[in-house]
Length: 308
Image (cartoon, rainbow, N blue to C red; front, side, top):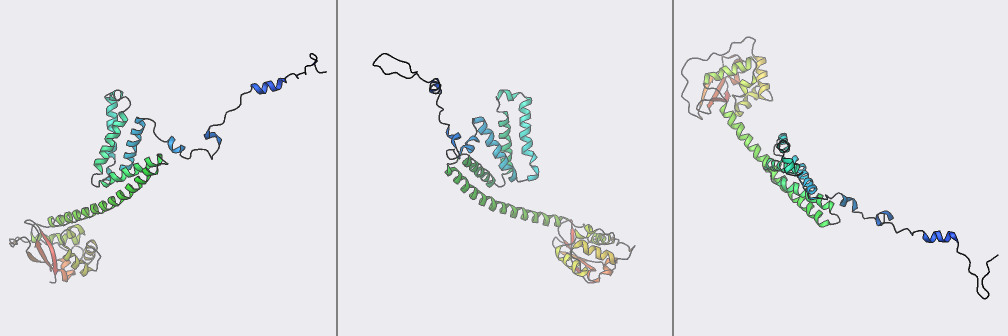
C-alpha cells in the first residue's frame, strides 16, 4: 500500500537509497593528455626529458661531450693517455687537497675543464677539429630542442663546413709530413757513408760475404742501386746483396785497405777505387770499379759502378 497523506494532496514516493549513493559518488575527472591516447601525446616529450635540469648537469654534459668529440682527432692518437691522465690527476689532486669540499661538487667539472683544455692543445695541428666537435654538439643540442629545427639545421651546416675544412687541412698535414720525411731521409742518407775511399771496399766485401745488406745498402746512392739491381736481376738492395753472396766462394778473403794517402777530393767531387780483384767484383765484373762521391767533409758514398 502507498502511504496516505492529507486529503487533497498528492502522495510523494520515498527516495531510493541506491540513488542517494550514486549522487554522493564523485564524478571522475578527465585523464591528463599523456594518458588519453597516442593521438594526444606530445611526440617531443622523450627528448625534453633528456635535457639537463641544472646548471651543474648541463656543464657536465657539455664537458663530457667536448671530450668525447675531440678525443678521436688528436694529432698523436697513440698519446691519448696524456690528456686523460691530466684530467684524472687533477681530480685526484683536488681530492687529496680536500678542495672538492670547497668546490661544493664542482671538482669533477674542474677536472673536465683540464681534460678538454689538454685535448684542445692535442688537436692544435688541425684546428678544424674544434669546429667539427662544436658542430656535433650543436646538432645534439638541436635534437634535444626539437621541434626547434633552426638549431639542428645550423649544426648540420656547420658540420658540413667544418668537415670540408678538416679534410683539406688533413691533406696539407700529410703533404707536409711526407716532405719533412723525405728531407730527413735525404739528410740521413747524406750523413751515412765511409770516411775513406778504401773503407768503401771493406764495407762492400764484408756486406756481401757475411751477408750484411745494411753495410752495402747504406753506402749506395739511388743511381748505384739501380746498377746493382740491373746486374743481379734483384728487386731491391737486400735481394741484390743476397744474389752477390751466392756468387762469392765460401771463405773468400776480405779486401784489406792499403796505407796509401787518400786522394784529395772536394765535397761533391768523385774518385774511383778498383774492386775488380775482390771476390764479389770478380763475380760481377760490371760492378768492379766503384765510383765514390764525397757527400760531406767526412763521408763518401757509392754513386755509381763501372765495368773492370
